[in-house]
Image (tube, rainbow, N blue to C red):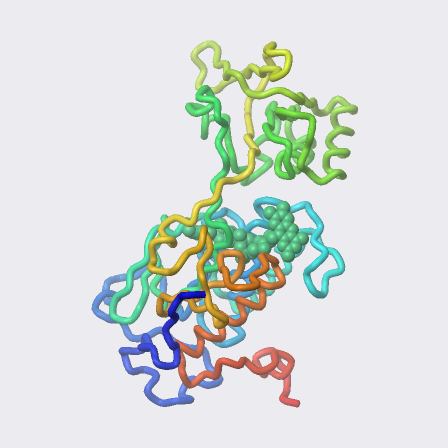
Length: 383
Ligand SMILES: Cc1cc2nc3c(=O)[nH]c(=O)nc-3n(C[C@H](O)[C@H](O)[C@H](O)COP(=O)(O)OP(=O)(O)OC[C@H]3O[C@@H](n4cnc5c(N)ncnc54)[C@H](O)[C@@H]3O)c2cc1C
């Protein structure tokens, strides 16, 4: 691979406080944060965790569970408003067929299971906050996000393809209305009750929201630049049923052309659509526009943390070391010879990363975790 990785068995440990000087002293109980150092004697809104995971996709969620199983304190930070990574943001209604133990599972349902498992030890998932920086002081990291500062002993980067942002409408006429009638993230469908909603897009999110809102909004109109949809066939068929029943309308080969606000109102009442083939325009009533145009992703400051990147992927070795001491990686964000970007592989990489990090923080804890089926933690007895 051409990248030198530190030998973790010889690397400096983040225990300058000396609290782990007696091997085995922690066995069987939860680890406690190191004593405050000079930096952390300042009030910190979040307690020091053993492991902070960047990303609440499948790899990060499994890492959170696994850290708890290794009796390490942990937390996740994620830019998105909900957990699940690509599964939740890009294909919640698609079936997945290649996750062991599930002959087939909806992405949305797999996320639910992963979140349930990740929550077993009560560790937090901090959503809706993009990572903005990383500092290291006195043997601890402080991970900065848009909403807080998270002191931590080790980091696992499970950032997938990076932080997603919704793709914005390209028409300049849309820009002033973001937050005032144009919304690219739907948090509560009930807010659109009694509204005339226009959804722009032809993928899963567009059709998922079109079908969900057609029972809530006064009227739902879906606008797409072509007649080819990248959405689950069953959802498209369901929406076409709503159109036939008069609850919804569909404009193919159309795009947004203008937003109309009459009589000095703060809100718009109509939009103009343009037929991209015939070059004609049509004005329709609309209170809300929801652009569902997919996401753009960005690795952000993570790319500047001194790790080796190949394209947007972190080069790791077989123990998921990144080349930066105290930082491991797992899931789609990693690359190594033979790498497969699959959920199943991310799970294994997450387990490896957590086991390595736990041993690095607490040398008295073995890398090998033992079998969960024998763990007293789960109320089991040794064979
Ligand atoms: C349409 C589609 C279908 C797929 N089907 C399958 C399939 O059938 N089987 C299969 O195995 N795989 C499938 N995949 C691939 C699978 O979804 C990925 O392998 C998996 O999601 C990777 O998980 P992850 O946890 O590594 O990363 P992601 O799922 O990408 O999650 C990463 C998380 O990190 C967060 N993040 C990134 N950067 C930051 C930052 N700077 N600050 C804060 N948070 C950040 C993101 O918001 C995101 O939530 C499919 C992918 C797509 C797009």
